[in-house]
Image: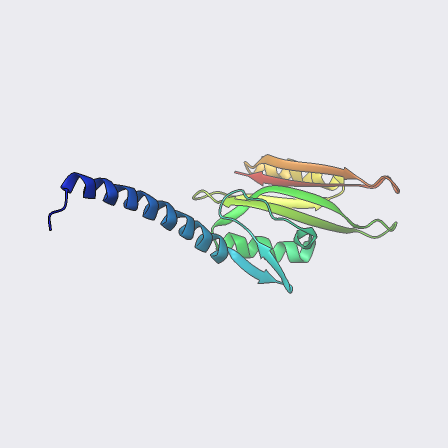
Length: 157
């Protein structure tokens, strides 16, 4: 039996292209699965680029947010964006929630994030600028019922 070499090379080339695409999809699926971890009984899926988390369970109280940021930092990731809102708008209660998107942290990059009232954030902005950090993301939220405001920022340097 004799095979036509050119036809086999084309078939092999087509197969290699399909195999490469299949392997790439499988690799991305595995990487996304590996980037997931369980925290506080809820799935928190964070991608390896600036992919955004989804769902109400992604809102984190400040203590939990500190833990997640530290865990992500250990994986070589840093906050790319931050979102914030009130957890409790009862007068006298200071309870905020935060949500992050993540990106790969470049070598020797420093960053800092904060959530709080606008005056507090303004003081943190001054300190961040003094040490060479620049604001890369910020949000300000106002509760319509109480008029209270909360802001959040990420600084990178």
